[in-house]
Image (cartoon, rainbow, N blue to C red; front, side):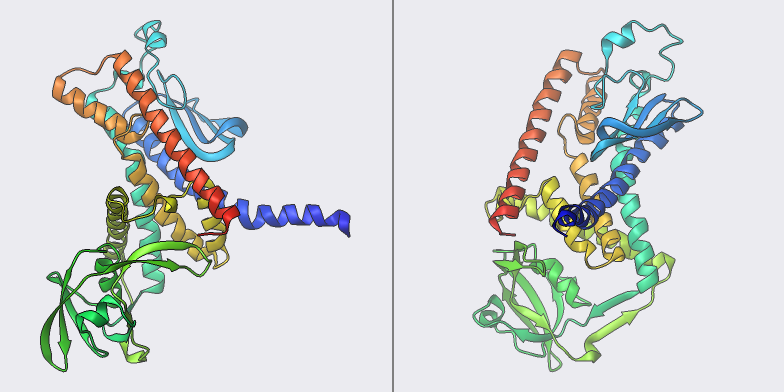
Length: 383
């Protein structure tokens, strides 16, 4: 029996930890690269390689236009390599292009018009947002929408809400002038507003009252024991079934809700970064591949639908990350194209190479920092 223990443990680890992570990341990466690939093909750019993962090729095939589609051993990303690229980083191989004649250079990415190159680069992040929208739209169409009426059913002691004067049964009408239709709407304001006063309008027994409360940055723990910090006022919904609102959604309504969900992720990401820079958030909350893998395995225990929902959220996050104006990322390339449009000519090869090296260093440092957080989280027992 002891001889079987190690293989069984290894199989269990692969099934519960590795497979969910690879499944989610592969979906997100594939659609990101498919965006680059599709727009490149539409603009007659020769695509030499479409890779999911990095490192040695595990398996692959060549399509009718001689693009090599392959799956690689390290499932931590992917790339599309165009004619004229040096490698997977999409840097232009100026020396190789200089040795090609006009016929050989046909289809080279570098020779396309500025707007075509920008469209190809932007297509990756855009594909991530489209993937998220498709997933969310499908889920909203299938499950509909369940909302909690914005009626206060609990107030924490010594919280911002108790000090501001909220009482049980208050219905929140607006926050900062924005209409509140559900308890989820309240969270949209409070979670990202720690330390900033919020003006509430409430309905109390038919009377409209104005109350100002200041959400406090609070450390919380999710169902898996992961710790995180968020802004809280200290109110909760009521347990009355009458406060639960269920609405079926058609395709158009579901699509609108999907855009709303994507906008919420973008908004929370922006505020997290802003508060991180301002010192309100703990940099230890940043996750690297190990942390994302841990989170994926935890969500996988809840079911396939929750895992697919996580894929949608990660797709938005990866799309946003790639739009950062950092050389090496898609946003860095778009920054160069913007400068090219303003200057009327591209930056010289040496300047671009230096910028790329700086960008690569920044990305690697961030990855190392996030991975160190992951290791501390995994072996230190904190979330």
